[in-house]
Image 1 (cartoon, rainbow, N blue to C red):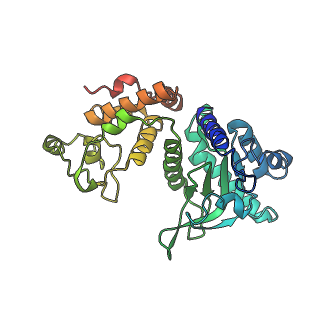
Image 2 (spheres, helix red, strand yellow):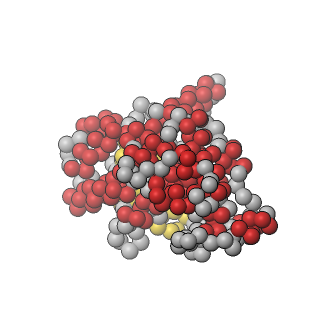
Image 3 (cartoon, rainbow, N blue to C red):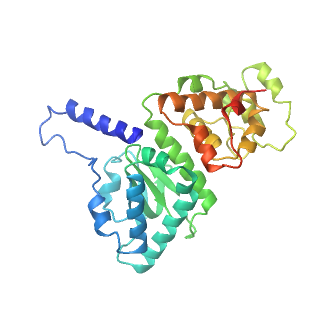
Length: 320
């Protein structure tokens, strides 16, 4: 469990460094043995939702938590992260029905998208399940969001959007894919420098204005298939952002996009793009090499398991 072991190591080092502090100065905040295990096990048969949470705890070594105190969520965010949320009420039958629907939606839109061993290695220790969640955009404005992280050891996933209706599976899939990728990226023991350094420089963060004039000429050569991310792909990015698909992704989003690109798509769809866009292929190869060499994980194998009848190969990331 590489990433979880990395987190444990960080906690151990921090403990040693702070060992000289007085008892009143240091209060341990993280229980790496899983503070929620006792509750999850004891309530494994209480409701259908609890049974599913118990099964996931055994599968992924991650606690999906809905019975929470405010301090569970906020302790690392004090005066750094403002949020408004509504928890599920364990005593309300209707809330437990909604929670079960929430869990099934998470399974469909997120957990089923990845191989079990990959999730067991890389999921955070805690995932808080909430009815709804709003995060501060400004000091006066809050926006509803489907998911968020505390940038430490937990993620939060909400069920209801501002309209009071559940988030759709495609929306939740997109939000959780991005969040999971970002969560993973922040905890990497080493960064993929070859991949990062291969980012094409663009002006004004727009993929339509690369600094290299030769790349600007390539933008005029269109593929024989529809592609709203053509400019981004020419520059070696998986996606362009904003409604017009012209904003270059940041470093963290770039990493997340490639994880999605390689593991969550059919081989024929990937090949269509890597064989036309040489930088997309090259950066994909750097990304795959990094995972294999530094994280001991084979992304090609993950894609093959997900799409056994439409596989991708390493050679598909060597431009023709």
